[in-house]
Structure formats: structure tokens, C-alpha cells
Image (cartoon, rainbow, N blue to C red):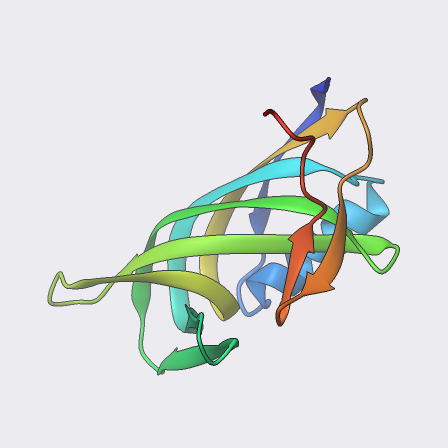
Length: 141
């Protein structure tokens, strides 16, 4: 069982890479498990779609300003360090929206809500089928 731990609300400085900044923030603050939410605007980003058959990401690079409509993800441990995994929806100037796994994002402005979780077993990521996944939960059958 997990319980709510420290909660952080912060703005990522302009020009920072979003995932790297949140990862550093988690490491500095000792966050090993958490929920990430964010909104804002990006100067550009790379989104991924995981091709399940090929077991690799197809990357869509957006070299344009976009609104960060929504970012939802988590913090857990990969190879002993905090790892931030986020999916996003971004909106172009014409209103079209794209979504996917966030690979990289250059920040114009980003407001982040990071809810730390404590207790329970540590969630560790292991490489499986080309992905870093949490260990499976207990059998419910």
C-alpha cells in the first residue's frame, strides 16, 4: 500500500529539457515513486509511438511551438536512479492535437505538479521486449 508523500509544484525554466529537469528534480528531492502532471508550452518536442511488432519507437519530431495541453506520467526507479515516464498531448497553432510518449521537449513554460508516493514495495523497471517496464503485479487468479 502506498501513501501520499511530499507534493511539489514548480515551474520549469525556459530552455530546459522537460524530462531531464523533472528527473534531476526527483533525484535532488529523493523521489523514488510519484505521479507527474504538467501543462504549458514547448518550443519543440519529440513524440514516440511504440511499434509493438518491431519493438521500437517510431519518432515524430515537432520543430515548432506547441501548447502542452496535458502531460501525465510517473516516476519510478530504473537502474538505481529516478526515471520519469510521461505521455503528452500537444496542440499546434491550427488546433490539431498530437499525443504520444514524450521523448524530449524544449520548454517555453511548463508548470509541473509532482505528487510523491511512499511505502509499499519499490517499483523497479526491468527491460522486457525492448521496453523498461515495472515488474508484474501479483496473480489475481
